[in-house]
Image (tube, rainbow, N blue to C red; front, top):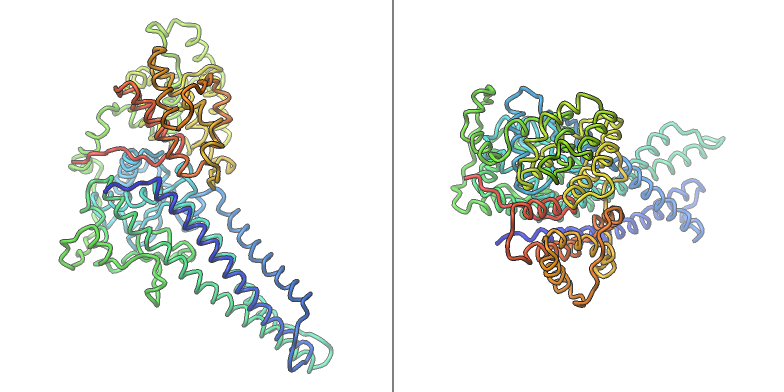
Length: 609
């Protein structure tokens, strides 16, 4: 049965609430244990055999513990505020760019691109970790700031189908809404562990302390500090113990789900099953040796850290995962393969590469390759915003003004690229233009912050004050997805608990714009009535006028909407498009672009056979 990604995102949100509740219980336990420890430590300071604390001191200690834990969480949260790339860099990952001549890296980029298009997600930046283990991860708060991380062992030891299975698994985590929960888990566990770090500090301080004037007072003071230090270390480890139990319990079930979802939209159970079998027979398995691997172990495809007890494992056993996707498995793991380096010429002749070319056959090779370079990727976006309302557009004042803007703001190099690519871009059906836009995202994220600022100014002026829905969606997609790489305020870190009726003032103008795409007034009215019926609104509800600067203001609340609300919005979009009982290529492209912009988890049907 097909995975309902809206439902799974909602489940991930509920898991986060449970996680927060368990964390609060853990903090209360830490407060109680810390008070007991300070009580005994205070007794050592005072030389009392039966030390006690007043309620005032207990209150102060409790507030200190809450403050310390809270500050540790906020500090980690701030460290991770840029999303996925922060995690990848913390694990020693290096960005893989399209100009790499390494055939294994190029194959990796191709597979990530294919899976992004199949999942109808922006193509994410890819990071390579210098690790021998076979592993991978997806990290970020939302699809806009997501990255894919892959180990060196993964690209060297897996064939293309197996690599595709691993990447499909990671995209499933993005669609299932697991990434945001995983980053929150990192921050929460950091708060609990920080108590232990304070204990280590007190132990070091106790060894060098010189308290009081007498030897007896000094020894008693030192003993008190040492007791506090040892106690806080123990409390920190207890917090880690229960924190890892929570992390393992939440993570294991999401891994089963991601395996099943990966099979659903990659259409190839042999891929992910083969990768799991390869891990089982490989010496380094899926181990990650980086110092930060422990706190981020729940992000990975396979078990990243050796655990002394199975209850702490963040992933289900390999044999159980394999049997779920390959019930006929004979129980034998795959034999490790020697590292194979293939030349670009050999890679181009492999059957999988021919499949990739067939999948993207509607997009000319020139445009596909151009989308991977920062300058030409900008040109592709500009070409999509050029006026196309006249067969003689090259002679129109509007078109001439757009060319002048490109030259004045970005210079002749970009203008030359636009001139070279614009006709080819505009000949594509909108669905393929959307795919091209997805493919251009990693290259646009390679721009400097200054270059992206000027590019943003340019595309705003190219769209003008009265863009059509297609132009507005494309422009908003770039501003949201690419801007999140340069400014953390564009990263969507949480969903809001607003109901659909509360969001109707933001939803209805967008749905009105979708209905307008039906064409003639009768068709527009039919589409609008279908929207009202879907949302259970009165049939005489007035259709709002479409003002695109008002849609700009509506976009942020819609991006923050909960998965359940987004599912209602998506269903209303569907009925508006289907109201005329005919779905054109333009409507398909519009539908895909709406899903991309609103971060709706609706993967496309991708055939790889």
